[in-house]
Picture (cartoon, rainbow, N blue to C red):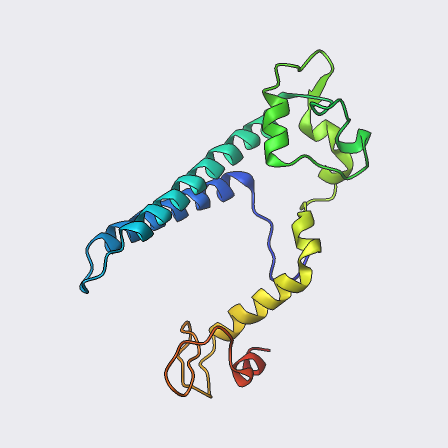
Length: 185
């Protein structure tokens, strides 16, 4: 795990997702009445959809936290009969969707166990680091580098911290000027 990454507990993550949804809804309210004659209705609908999606994720993560924290029984096999967790491969964990499906499984039998008992090898290696981090580590490093660059003013175009770089003709750039990137290192 990189030094800038910190572990987040599930209740905090769910809470942060709900706060992000609230923030998106506030943006929708702002976009409904703007000072320029511009129809932003389609944007508002898309942002509202994103807020609803974040709320759904927050609810699912809260449910998963309860399953894990309370030691609720989880079916030992996936719906296709394949084992999961340490029974399949040490360190292998379920996705959010899989955990919720197996915790609420109608196929759950006496052959159920608390989730953490099924993933002992991964649970002992706290904090758990998502496979996404390992697959996208170079992408993550690039994002972290860009975030650091945006915290700096740009000496080339004079963009203030938090604002994108601009070309000589004043167009917003999708890239960051190299001196700004170097200043962030």
